[in-house]
Length: 513
Image 1 (spheres, helix red, strand yellow):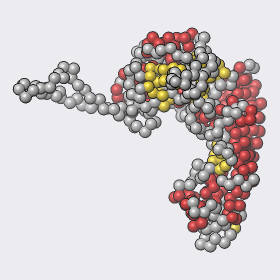
Image 2 (image 1 turned 180 degrees about the horizontal axis):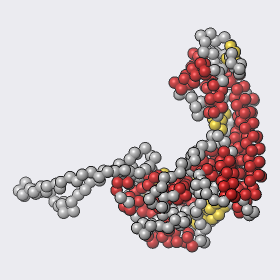
Image 3 (image 1 turned 45 degrees about the horizontal axis):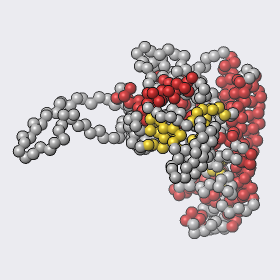
Image 4 (image 1 turned 60 degrees about the vertical axis):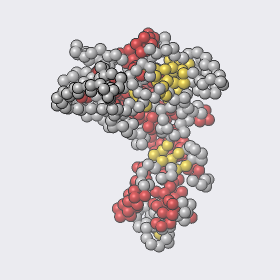
């Protein structure tokens, strides 16, 4: 976004106040090293024990950009379907009740039903993305004369002009193979950088080339910019759209979406009142924190959710570990290490018959997949799904519970019976057997060591790529930008190393999970 002294910021505030009736706000923008622009308090906010905290800002719902506010500007067949029932009343109907002596009104015949028009509703995400793509203020493609002016043009002028930091832009070729030799080599380096991400950081696959479209503004570049703006900046907001699963309940909000993410958060914005209409009296409010005063210049944050670092990188293009202070201050407590691929390989190593049968058992009991390591809450520990899987891995499926050894190349040892394993799921027993628990912990340590080995290999590959491709970017900001991208990927690997080391130490020191 923009600085508070920038004409675009001034224009945005003026637009909100004159066009949408927004009152005075107690925030302004400021640039933070490594985190871009954020929101700070523009004046001291006193604390009064006898009064609720004031609102830092209130954004009228008419200024929000979502499926409901866009609906009047697009043909009805393409707007998302509202789940609200609308009751139409005649403007000429009398509020006076008819007496028994009065002549009953003559019923007005209903007009003949018109044939239903085809309806091709877009989702909320598709609808807003389409609007942003058509009205991208940074697009080099001229707008068609028939395209109406955008009521949110002042807002869109303040949105990010590019998303070079986001991994999705590294793998999507908006030039579709064009450009000079240096451009192509840069693109190859960025694709390799995306491939250096840990396998658990899942970004969208490369998009297929778009078919020729009669509307020139719907280019891959414009659509990518539009979708990333919506996906990285939308906020939860009930819109009452079908399907009503919550997937459609999002909005973009001027000013509010400037706030940076933090593991701690200023109180979350809320609806006031809870009715969602286009009325200017409905606001999206952000209160000051309770129980303390706020100083001028204090940054306010949004908490994007309880997400691990890989999710934050894939969805928003950053890892919060980049801002972690000394002694773990500001550490993402929801970070984790995913081990689905590693555990799946373990069971494949048991052979087709035993491995498939144990996988079927885990699927039936609801314990297949989503295996993770965590450092919080203390002590560092495996997920509640990983231990049962590893215990079954070392459990004999034969009727006898006598310890056995696999005939496969892995020579996997087994102890305990399937019935004993199921007793641990029900809480009747804390472990399958002492020997099984020992084997389980040994395998857990081995998995942690495997992660640490992958981290070393990941760092080596990143260092080679960062050094070898640096000359493709000019000195100064461009070279710094390439370095920043590489360092953001390293943050993910560092988090994986720290968590796996802490879980291994918990396991080796005999911590009970």
